[in-house]
Image (cartoon, rainbow, N blue to C red; front, side, top):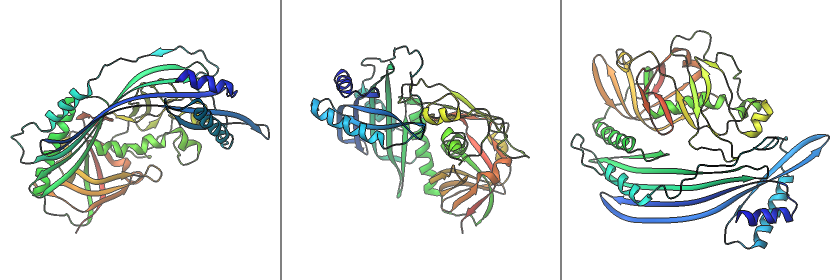
Length: 421
């Protein structure tokens, strides 16, 4: 199919292009209690074609780009019509010129493709056994769950000689944990079959559901020291990841500058050290992904970004880096718990606005420590702005490793607004 597409591109005299071939195989299982209600196996193949058109206006170079989705069962005439439509659309997009991978450089063809490495049906059974295994130390159960596993064989080819192949693996698990009349929805995503991590996540969900069943009280409105846990730290740290992105720097929505301290002039707590990595081997453009050091002890060291915005900033492109890696702090979780605090274990929804720095969310479950008493609480919400708290926040010595986050298990933030009673 790729050769067919290239032949038609040549016939139409289209010289700059990229083809992303994706062969997917997926399996899904739907369970109520421990009984399978439905399972589904699916295989698909598609080709994402990107056409680039170079043109000049007022002595300025532009490179437009447009996409078309092609399928193996399409006729040559159908493929041609899609290509002609994308080529015309590319002329309407006036992006400043930027080079694509392989342009002006020597490219080696690479293949990390592993044939028939995964048995998705076996993986589904493994996940099912973890989800529904007997756990004597909790009262909650998994009421229902959905398991979705997808593997794909990826190939990226472009007109400058790029030709790379690799595998992708994606597992998504949704579950409803229940304790009497309390039900909690949980959703997890993994880039590999990590049985220990899945077991940890399910056990944690059941333990939190037990606590949620016993949580009755809401704290009074006021300012509190809070402790964020695990995946919510990753969401909080997205502020630093996004502000160091080349796109936000180019469009003026980020004031992060290389070698500048970005946590303020009087940092009392932990200074952020942050690295980024990808969840795949290559970007969609065929650029190899590797770990990048972005911030060191509160000082910006590097930007990250895609091909176009990296070129505009005159930096090396990194591609999309979604995995957040944060250096550990000097304070133990036990030390954080010495003062009165609210340790938030679960939010209904926690969000960070990377433009303004505002963060907040509704508390699903927290532990309120007051005068040597620990009280499970639910309800109320937190709100704050990272610019007001980043000088006096503390990362834990203890660390965890999740699918898209590695770093401290806890983040202590001083004087955060909680709206309660």
